[in-house]
Image 1 (tube, helix red, strand yellow):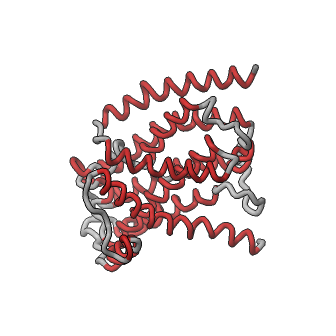
Image 2: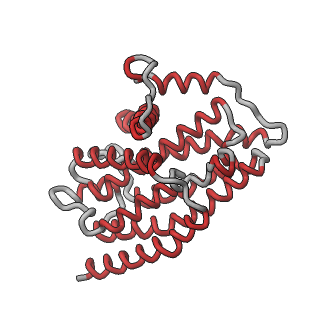
Image 3: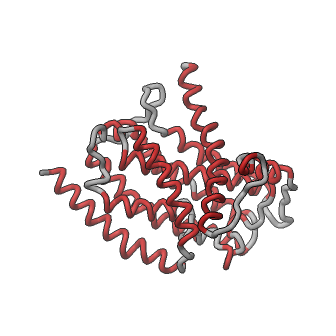
Length: 305
């Protein structure tokens, strides 16, 4: 294998880990502004090194394994979650041809589908009723919201005639973006990625009010830190994919839209209360699915003209 290809493949992993750290800092800063309170400001200048302090604190804490837990899978589950979330960064749409996935869209859907297995494993092997309920919720939520998400990918692929994120991005060069014909699909997409990444107001997998942190309630120290990194890595990856699909082509606009979607995740967490779980499922099956079916039919008609 070419050395350049190996280096280019490793860069997204390293960049994603650093981005997760500073994204958590950005989240705490934005939440503090919205809630009119002080955010991280003590560690170095304006709290810039706060993520490294938090990571060091978590990694130095004791990793406790519950007595009734299945020890092997319990230790393995956080690593599975992190590996699956980092695998998605291989699909980063480089402009060079060193790393190129012809069917990147299909691979992203597969990685998104498999990511729920880490949550399922961690909830089941903890041998706790709260964590098991969180895992069951995660499976039902993920399966439900992947259906309208699949229709969104269908519309984008149908309009572009391509399955690669690089080619979809290049297809939108100039002033044409898929945002204009598919603005309704973008709204549905943002709701779906909120549900897929278990973010507020759809964070029922780790609902503190009823599940006491849900699937990760038995994890501490390094295990909890790895799960935390995996979740935020998935959020940033979803932001990048959103920008590529709807505002690709121009790298400046792609970067700005990625930042906008990432901040959208944070503002929704600070602004909206958690819904009821039955309303979440009804939203998917009775509203979003019908909307995406209508948009898909319209896309087929427009492309065929």
